[in-house]
Length: 574
Image (cartoon, rainbow, N blue to C red; front, side, top):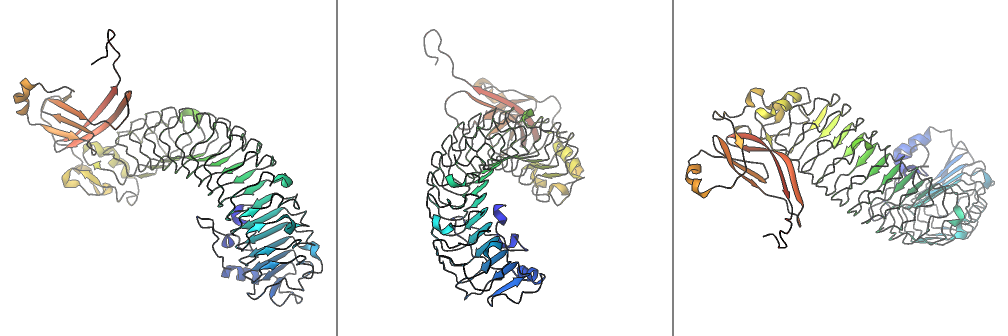
């Protein structure tokens, strides 16, 4: 049973979902009108139904009187589902259901929703020998004791959620050995005792999300070899023992998002060969071991967004050929190695790289992603795109380039993306001149509303005009004086300063001012490059820039490498 729909009232599971606040507190739930309409369609109420309840078809009993503070008598003997919603029940004493039904064995599901239960007496559910599902949500319980569940030997699903539960006795579940789902989301659990799960070795789904766990004891899950879904989202986990998941070889879903994980041990996922979903988003990860995912041949969804990653090792996805969706959004990535994706991810359909610090992309970064349909590159610092960046992405449908520093795109960049129908271009300083004709042609076949807020950044007379509204005859470049334009990098010779100053110079620069090129009618005399901050030597900067000025635009390719000079003849180089 899915965590989001567990123990829902009949007819409207989604309407009854309990949603916790970020701190794990329960939000009060109110029965929706839809529920009453659905219940009204069931067979007429049974004449033997207790006064404070409604019975439908003698199998479903719904008790919601606010003044109801005990288990009523007269519940039909063949009732299989019993719901208490917004009652005044505070305590379930020992044998609370002994007088409530004449035949307890028929009851399969028992739900307490938004009732102020504070304590469960010893053997509170005694006699409910056929009970399969027990749910208590939005209660006032602060702890769980083993004896409260005495007699529930056939219970398959136990859900105690969105309550102030802080403590779990080490043998809290020893009377329920048949449990397959244990859902403890939205409580205040601070610790897991080493032997807590030993009596329920057949458990397949365990949810501990939205609690206050600071760590996981070594071996705490060792007794759960059949676990398939493990949710640990929204706790306070700052580290993981390297072997904490080594016994969960059948795990299909692992949720670790919303914690404070700063690093992951290299072999922590080495046994997860069947894992399909891995949620690591919204942690504090700064780096990832190169072989972290190497054993995950069946991994389909990997979410790493909302961390602090600045770089990724080249072989990170070497063992994940089945990935369909990968998100690296909201990190601090500045560059990506060309072989990061390549032919390693032939099934990848969605790739999200938005909200990073990317300033350039290698030409072959996406080559081999033939199934890619959505590519998110918005909210980066991209100043240019390689012409072959999207080569062979014939299935690409959606491309987000919004909120970068793009002034133009290379001619032909979209030519092999036959399925592409949506491109987001807003938030870029587009240079609306002759170099934008290719993009203008493409926009003729696109929805004007999509890029209504994509505006010209230059020239001055077109600045602020919406790209779809620019006419092709307006996209012109200023005429240059006759003769070739040559760019060279050289220091100005003081002796030739007077001659140089006589030339009608034009100063071209990129929107951020990182590159500035000064040119005369026949040649470009000076190039100024502002390098990003870096420590030590070995710095390398390479890329293509479109530089603009009142004279027009220029395309410039620059490659700078800074290396420490080796000592010469035993002396340090000056």
